[in-house]
Amino acid sequence: MYNRKAAVLYAKEYALKPNPKYRYFSLEHTGGDCTNFVSQCLLAGGAPLIYNREHSWWYNSKNTANVMDDSWSLSWAIAHSFYWFLKVNEEKNLKGAKGREVKDVNLLELGDLVFFQNTKGTIYHSSIITDFLGNVPLISQHTFEALNIPYHKNWIAHKIHLLKISI
Image (cartoon, rainbow, N blue to C red; front, side):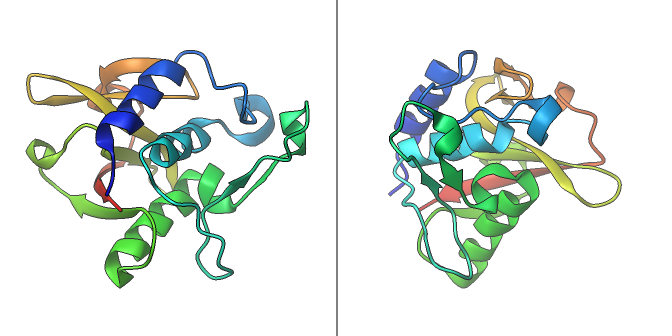
């Protein structure tokens, strides 16, 4: 069961100051830390790491003094890969976190995810819903670090994807 409260508490704690136990993906070197951050939130909410060869989602800490020694799956750190990991898990009812796409923002809850797509069809950013202002979801994210900002004014996107998360 997805512990939405735990995922959101984690997001609120680390939205503005990244968790030093994880590698931070700077925009200038790797494209950004958004999905790494959201993956951490889902892990805090009880999503199990998935190590299978075909459909994986994981982060391995080497437990050294340097998080640069750590390793991770593409779906852990790349928005497009993470989006499809969640969607395929939902469609095939696989083990782990699942994402069911919805069109109505009124169906969203704390801990659900918002993805942003460009005109080429690539999902390029991910965020987690950490509050509401009336019925408007507020998101927290990395790349840039933000806490409780309106989802629809955050990024210029051709399309926004709203995912209901479950485990």
